[in-house]
Length: 444
Image (cartoon, rainbow, N blue to C red; front, side):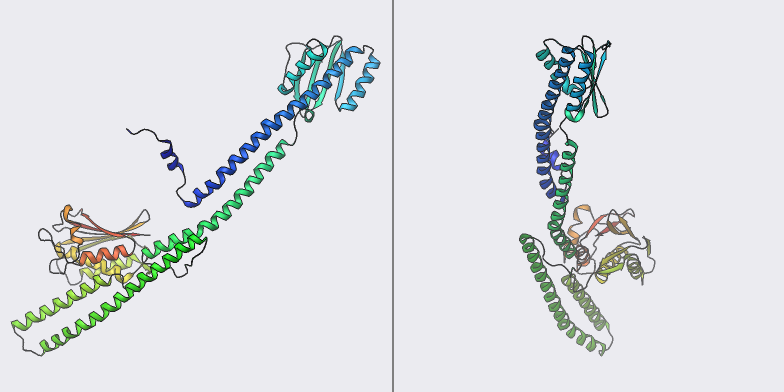
């Protein structure tokens, strides 16, 4: 059993799209920097400032305790405490004869330690005291010999202020930087996505007339290279199509003359055999040209596949008696395809199915973003080891089921070439009817 690998797990956790990965490259350092700055503020600045402020409060409280204990006269003590309250902005109350009952309560840990140390250092012995927070004030009670000194101290005298403003500023600045990064990355990644979509559409035989190089210089270079490659391929296909059209015309002209000459000859066994030979030659020539022509110059258009498959099934059964052809066609399926080429592909598959079986079935359905066209028959089938061999051009199987019996050996080769020109594929499998299943998969 293979062990756990952290980098492999990290790769699985990372986004698969370029935009997500690029965003992480920008966001991760920014978040790390923000975290370090926040840590430096709270640990190095906020904590230090809080300690200093608390020490200052402890000194003032120590002074008030000393003042209350060294001035036993109530009037003098009250006057001094009122003056100190006005100066320090504390609320100071002396409660004679009252003492802290029960255990000490310390609800302000940031000042407790400094108070204890200040009392011991300045007054020579520890004093009992309790503290609790009431709203924005620290309620501090110090036990004296003659009573209790109660102080209401604003919390901003002990805590470094504006921490919430700092955190808010950090969050807002991070969000602004993130928005800028997203906008910038979106503009940089979009040309790459457009290039990928254009290449995918070209691979499926669909036109992308509005594609232009955009983005960074490297992306523009890649897009320009794609346009150059597409122009060369289209020019090659056009030249080949024009050449084959000329070949077709040159070869069919003498065949037509021979057919006219045979039509003027008396009917006998020799002329019938020659006519059959000429028909076979014309059919073979058409198959050769169809295979060599490939995609041809047909453009992909939005097509009702349900109607196209049904028409192909009806055409395949036409003229065949004692043949059964069932259809299971999902309605309303549409896709941008080259209708004539795809119809030729289906005609070849249905013709093979009906030629080698007494019953066939054509199925059309959509499955997980892929459209499947299934052609099943109850014929002898093809052994699994020889199914790829059946796709070889100009090749006939020597034994078992021969899908190209009486033909040129191009039926399946043409069908697969058309399927792949649409970005899909054609494969063979065992049919539930007992014969062969041809599976055409087209991406949506």
